[in-house]
Image 1 (cartoon, one colour):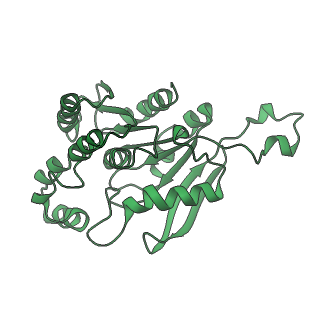
Image 2 (cartoon, rainbow, N blue to C red):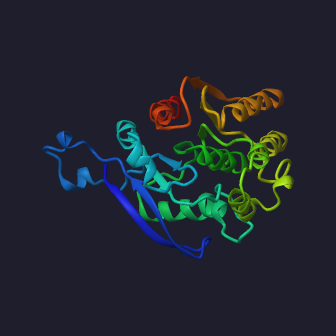
Image 3 (cartoon, rainbow, N blue to C red):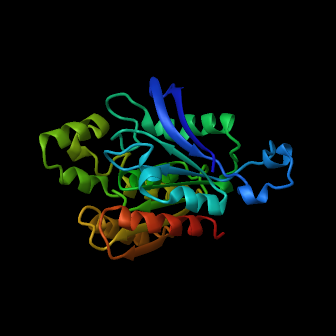
Length: 265
């Protein structure tokens, strides 16, 4: 697929920012006999998967460490992979509006530059670890924008993340994003609260996919807690687990399953 490593000024972030974009294209063996106009159709709008990286990674990680580009090409789905540092895809206490960027500014930029569908039924979001949290937060907060979302080994219990801060550096980073660690649970960044609020609002929730490896010492427990809560409140979801850890040996095959699941309906 055509691959674009893009840099643009994001108003939400008050700085230049990077992202990777892949756009489906006809395989070269199918272009024989076609005109340029037939190959490069201006009227074609592709479904899109916003794909979110984990902590300490960036916009290149998914493409360097997995086969997601090949999987997306098979499904003819565009990929948009932003870089958000260690922001948890949140409008941070330090003033950087990463949630606003992800859910408001970035989609507008993408649709203005690339042949991407604006329809809810063609728009998906997924991520791993910190990115799993970001995907859940975006979809549960703005269900009108996404048909479905997926979390792979997601840090879905931000209260548990706060409880397990183990160093001054981790605490400083957490405070710069969320503020006081003891006040995160039950607040506006808590996915448990967002899920309940969504159901109580009467809005249609996006389809949900959660997965975690059984030997993932970081996130398996919190994923179990989260899905039990979703059962309690009646928010439907698909859940899958396999043996493995918090690593690409789990995330790569899962990403293929996610694409199959996203497009099955």
